Length: 457
Ligand SMILES: [Zn+2]
Image 1: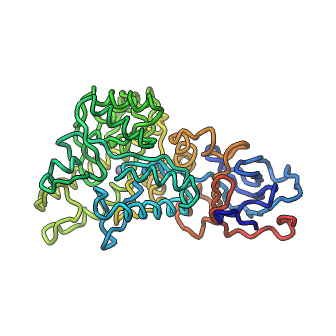
Image 2: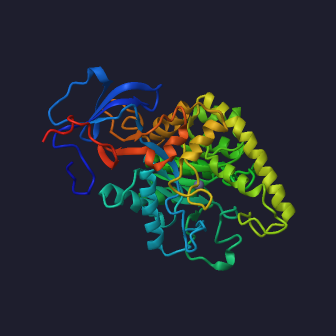
Image 3: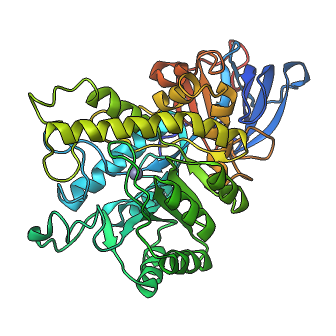
């Protein structure tokens, strides 16, 4: 098989890559066994029944023997540099835990993990030093392995909120650089921050709209004034970029949706009124519920009297305060487990993605989130596949290019041992991912060519 200059396999010169006898999950519709998909160059040339396939000279043919062929997935909440620092267990929150070059290398490493997990697209969430812009450019230039990428920005925050790092709990540190966050107050500063981040090359401007999610209970607070929120969204949209918001409460969901925020992160406490505003403004929702589940699994059996829980909220908590917080998180989680499927059934565009890069949720291990939506929320597996593929591509605004398997679209494909509609967990076992293609090129290939039907020399 020829090697391109960046080391990725591509099809024999001018020939096609042909996948025969595939169990096709096209990212939208029910499975179609017995399907042949032909790839020419970076795009899908045809999707047809096996019987309709007509061999052409130079075809590189793989008999998938009933394996699943599906679109590459999209990780829509990607904190590129969260992960191992120093002792290998702490997760960074500021991005200042190590030197910027180290943090950048971690981001590059995580991008590779993401691709190897079958995710051919990703949308950045907040990051320090605007690393995401360089990460995106390095992937595009071909010397860093990673998915198609939309660069996230600093997290825009208001003075006095939970993550106002240089003014709140850490004011005494006199930080010269606030890492992950950038503070702005008043409509003019919010618009200026949006323009600045966009000008630096960020595609999606992240904001913190309210407190809560995962390890802390939702509180009905909106950090911004409406005028600040609207000034930001207007400024960012004028530049053709998107806004995403950490919005873990009813008021933050509602106000962000009404202001035209494109991606609503977390959306704990979503209700019918929120759903109406979300549908009206065509927002995408990232339920990101794995973090809450994993936190509760750690925190609920914890012996707080013996040792303080390592994931605390602000200053060290007394055991009783910690227990009350965990009960409130549980109430949020149980509520959201019921409300999120209802929102999905009402037509909200759901996608997958979560705060990976913490010890209980490492980068690259993304499929347990999909499992959670099937097993705990009771979502049909086909819906969750659609969240991970078609909807993710639409959230990236690449829905006309990728996210489903159709003639003319980019060949971002994953070939899997097993049927995700029977057990979605099969996607989480690396050995099951037999091949991954990004734009028609294999980034992984452990399939053997069909005997006698391989590329003609
Ligand atoms: Zn996040």
